[in-house]
Length: 140
Image 1 (cartoon, rainbow, N blue to C red):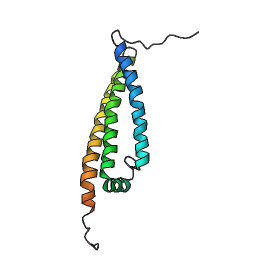
Image 2 (spheres, rainbow, N blue to C red):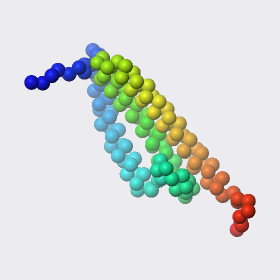
Image 3 (cartoon, rainbow, N blue to C red):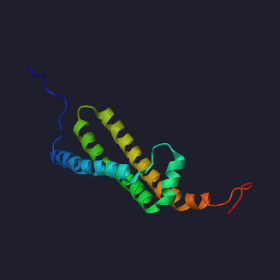
Image 4 (spheres, one colour):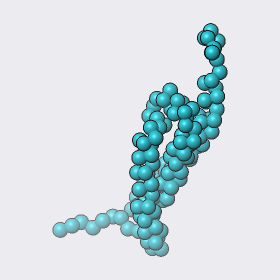
């Protein structure tokens, strides 16, 4: 015997939930391709090594900007999945669904702002700052 499920979708939201499920299946390969790009290019973005990240940004700024942009874009794309999960659990667990929606919006905003910061500051400004001579060292 199987117990009935507490999850029920409010009327009128079946198409939105179907769209959210399809959307999740569409963007999942995108995230896998992003990870492959990071591995192939050798980006240290997010690895915790600031020196390696700055070296990569200085050596190939276009590739670094592309990986930073794609990472920020995924946060916005993933938010549609968060909305679909919110629709699915809203009727059974309203407090948890609201918390999920707030946390999803927060991760989207932080991911996009982190991506913009990485693209602009690390790839355009940091390599120039690193080329300045440090007092007390010998310049060529």
